[in-house]
Length: 179
Image: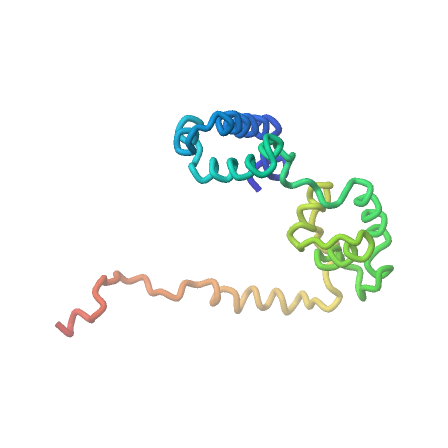
């Protein structure tokens, strides 16, 4: 997203752009040519053509701003319901373990709010409301600490070491001796 407010333009910038479109609308009514309007308003000819088509079909109201492009699809009231459902835990909703994944939250939103969101949109929605990803508070019961330490001492140094030998290279693809 481009702006810290969650994407889209600020209200001032939206109003500025609407003003430019309305100026173009006045000039459409005066019968000015598209290229002249584009040059004077410092916008692309294609944008002016698009505005002219909208103006012809629906008048000056078609050039007015329709508000922020990224209006939230989940209202605050709906999110309060979602938070209540999330508080019940995943097992209360039929999931086999106590982990909330984005896909599970997506399923919960679809079931309870009847809204279909992508996984990325679910993440942005949760982050916008102060939620964050969570790491497990404890280690897995199956974890073998001795085997982990042994692997770190014996295997990891070999994996970590560079595969290239520290010798000067050649930019030639053939061996120097073959010339």
